[in-house]
Each structure stands twice: as structure tokens, then as C-alpha cells.
Length: 596
Ligand SMILES: [Zn+2]
Image (cartoon, rainbow, N blue to C red; front, side):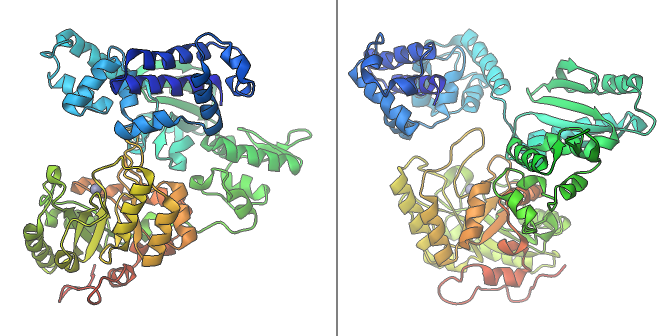
């Protein structure tokens, strides 16, 4: 742990204490220690081994030595963690906004429950701050500037944002006609990581368009892309620029001959590539962005496609989603890579909302859009009553809604529509509907939408209680994280997965781009423990249904195969694979079976 990290923990603790209303002396001591450590040439990690020396530093007392020892030994600090139970972690982002000190942040939290940069931005945009003491119109403007800067500088982007940028730029490049033969995204977007740092695009030059003059002309064309905010670099074979949302884009112009080597190199991950290079060296070869070549004489042996390169390295082709150096190299060598699930394997979508709660489209519109995507069945899963902000349905409304869904399903929509519910897991782990309603639902998805900050043991018990409820079938967006906005729930994943395996409860792989929950590591744990997985979109409009592809990408990153995911099964088999609820086999609508 380096001094910078230690200083950051101390500074965040100071800020959180200030928000919490601690006396000035208390938080100042953390701030001072942070300032000192930031500029200190000696390593604190070393110094904690000799506490006497540490205590000689100005402003570092006995207590601070204890705190520093704890930070070095555990990688975190208990007081900071405790404060983060009281306040959302995103409040640390708000604190980073220029022009908003801890006092104002505390004020906004107390009065508006503003806990994210987006919350603060909305308050300023709506003109809610100008009349407040200590703010005013000028400060409102400054806050808006600060939120812009923040958004540009945080440097991670959701997968759908990066993907649509890649598509728009690709379309623009293709206007250059035969000069560019292909455009391929590499980097973390190609590996399907849930967020993307910067965007790498590889362009292969068309036949007869490879002279430097032609390459320059193509580069010039690329830099005319209308979404460019700032051009960062214009080299012989590369242009870099930022877009208006702050996303950095690097476009490389390559000859076809070395495309495979470049694609492999720029797709990464770094760790995967380091392993591949080691393997190449052991075989008397060298691997770089231009070719796999002989160590002596650097004679290329493979470079045109990734497949050729892997083959020369005596490995099976490794799909990009697996290239994280977490066992894929050994598996590829032993011909034991999983046959990853594909988009076309998915036969249904088991979480979506209609106008009955907070969705934008009717049951029929959702069904029609899903049918067009090729699904054989869907479940409409509107919110239960606890989620009042999303117009959740009480028992009476839900009972009527179930009848309506079954009627719609039987009306010849060309797709089977199941009556589901996204039922809240209450604070104590109870489900938000009577057993009578739960028994009537074809699909019970159980999710947490409140009390996100319970401590670990309480949260674990809450999850276990929900899973043990005999009506629970699927856990929706299991960790509750919102990418770039909200941290995951803190619970014992191992215990929760054991319980899911024991009771046959499925974990949802949520395809919504700001959730993508579960993450790859947890999906892999599901597979290893025999926990069923469902891939759903959590759509709030018909257009969202296409997000299913991101869920499939996450599942691939989790090494999942078709057999690991129950909504790859046809309708009847899917319902059989769901946990059986008390009181009988699942109730089927009388007439309909899944028909194309
Ligand atoms: Zn939900």
C-alpha cells in the first residue's frame, strides 16, 4: 500500500467526519496527517514497523500511529467503513466536486438526500439551490461546471455508451469507402467488461490504399468525425481524440497482414498478453503487436488472424471475454475451454416492467418487441407494493394484473407471456406479498430496493431469509450495484450461493447496462456451485429488451455455457427448471404452450 492510498483513506475519513458533524479538531487531525503523508518520501508501510520513528513526525500522535497501522495491515480503516454505513459511498464523489465543501455536501444530503453527483446536478439544473442561504445563482452555475468536469474526469463509461460511440465512429470511417476495409473495437469493450476506460478501434487499410499519403488522408477523414471534442494526437498510423462526453478514442490504421497480432495485442487484457508472451518465449518465439515471430531472425510465423496465432502457440482460440488470465490459458492448452453461451441460445426474458408499475409500454407492446427479438416467452414482472416510487402493485391490483397477463398470453400474441412479479425483499427478508398472491404468480423474482446499507451479517440473513422463502424462485439484480453510482450490497456471497444451490433458487444475470449484476467472478461461482442462472433485461421499455446481449456477454465472462442458464430452455422445460413452489406444480395457463 503506497502513501497516496493511505492519504486518500485518511482524507475520505476526514470528509466523512465533517459531513457527520464531528468537531473540527477531530477531522482536522486526519486531514493534517493526509497532507503530511502525501508529501512524505519515506514509505508509511515501512515506518509502521518502527512506531517510534513514526511518532517523531509532526502531528502524528500515538492514536494516529494506531490508525496508520490498521490501514497498512487491513487495507482499510474501520472508522471510514463505519461512516460509509451511514452515508452512501457515492457521497465521496460529491465531495470531489469543486466548489462544494463538506458542509454544503452535508446540507444537500440532509435536506434533499442528494448522494450522487447526478443528484446534485439535477438540483442545480432544476434551480433548487439558487435561493438557499450560502448557495445562490452563481454557486449553482459553478456546481454545474463542476459536475461536467467530474463526469469527464472519472474516466469510466458504461458499456452501452462505449458501444454506441464505437458504432457511430465506425459508420463515419466507412464513409471513406475502400480506404478502410474493416473497423474493429478492441480493448475492454471487446472483452465485454462492464465499464470501459478508453475506446480502441482498429482499422485495416483497403487493398491499394496503404501509401502514407492515403493513410494520412484517411486519418484526416477520421478526425472530421462530428462528435470530436478535442484532438489529442495525429501520428503516422494513429489518431487519438476525446468525445464530448470525455471518452478517449484511439484509432489505429493497420495493414491487413498484421491485423491478428494487433487485435490480440490491443484486446488485452494485459495479464493475458503477458502470459501469452511468456509462452511464446518458451517456444523460441516472440509476440508483439505486429506478429508472432521467431526469436532468432524475427521471421513472422503468424500475424494475420488471432486464430493462427493461438494455433501456433498450441492453444485453442480464446474468446475475448475470457482473456483475463484466470485459467483460460491452461484450459485452452488442454482443449477444455467452455463452449460459451450465445445470444441465440436465449429463449426468454424473465424480468421486465409494464405500464402497470414503472414501465413505459403495455403488456402487448412488450410481448410484440420480445417476439421480434426471437424470444419464445417472457415474464412481465411489475413491482410490488413496497416500491411506492415505482407505482408498485398491492395484492388487489396484482391479482387483477395476473388475470390480465394470462388473458393477453392466450390472445394469440405469438409469444407466451408469464405472469411474474418483482417482489421486494423487505428489510427483514420477508417478501412483499401474501403467500396467496405469490402462489398465483408464474415467476417470482425477488429483489432488494431499500435499506442498502445494513451491515454484512444482517444483509446476509436478509438474503438467506428471502431464499429460504418457499415461493422465491429468482433473485433479481442480486448485489444491487449501480455501475459508476452505487456500490454492491455487502453480504456473504458464499453463504448466499450455497443457499441458492440448496433450495434451487436462480440468480439473475441482469443485462441492464448500469447494473450488469452479477459480475463475472460471481457468475463463475454460481457455475462451480451448481446455482442456476437466468439472464434477464429488467426492461422498463420495449427498446430495453435488446439489452439482453449485454447479459449474455457478462455470462460469457463468467464462463457460462448454455446448460448453466435456465432460460435457454423452451418454455415448459424452463418452468420445470424453476424452483417448484408449494402446493403443486406450476400453474399453466390452460390453453397456451409456447409457439412461435
Ligand atoms: Zn428491481
